[in-house]
Image (cartoon, rainbow, N blue to C red; front, top):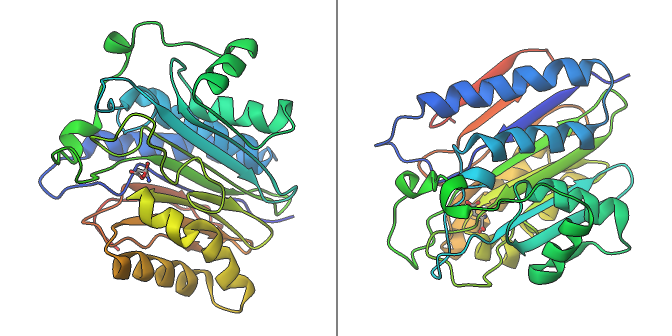
Length: 291
Ligand code: ASP
C-alpha cells in the first residue's frame, strides 16, 4: 500500500496584478473532495478525471466552462489523459460543443482503438457516447481567462487545468484540459491533448503541463520529465531542467509532476502557476506565486 498524493494546476498564466482568492478556495476544495476518494482506494485515473471535471465546470480557468474563443469566436477545446499503470492514453483536440473534454478523452481511451480524435470526428464520437453538450456557448462559457492573461491575439497568453495522481496501489495518472492560448487560429492544437507533450504518466512519473504549448510540443516536455527520472535525476531536477529548456527556447509556462514515491514538483518560469496538492503526509497546500 502506498500513501496517496495528488497535485493539480489551474494554469501558469497567473498575473501578479490579479486576485486569485476564488481560485485558491476552489483548488483547495477540489483537493479536499479528492482526498477521501483516494483514501478509499479509488484508481488514480478516476480521481484525475474527477478533479479535472471539477476544474472544467468551475468556469474559473481557461478550460471547460472558463474557455475563451478562437479568432473565429468558436470554442475549440483540447484534453488528454494517461494511465501510468497500463500505458493507455486518450485525447480529444479542437472539440466543439461538449462540456467536459476530459470525459471525452477518457471515452476515446476506453471505447476506441485510437488515442486521439479531433474536430468533427471527436464531436460525433462524443455525441455517440451521450456526453453532455453545450447548446448555447455564448451563455455557458465564461471566458474566465481573458482577464487572466489578457494579451493581444498572437502573443500566446494562456491558461489550462491539469491533475497528477498517485493512488494507494502505487499507480500514477495524469489529465489535462484547456481552451488553448488566447487569440489562437481556428484549428490550432497545443500540447494539452498530445501525450508526451502536455500530459504523461508511466511507472516513474505523472506530468501535466501548462504554458505556451508550441514549446512543450517541441520538447516532448511531459514525457521528458519522466525520462529524466528514469535516467537517474530526481523528479525535481528533471522537472526543473525541462522548464529551463522551455525558457531557453523562449517559451513560458510550468508543469506539475508527481513521482512514484509521492515526490511533488511544480516548476514554472511565468509569474505564477495556480496549484494545489495533497502530499503523502496527508497535508494539503495551495500556491500561486510562491515557489
Ligand atoms: N498549454 C496550453 C496550450 O498551449 C495552454 C495553457 O497551458 O495555458 O494550448
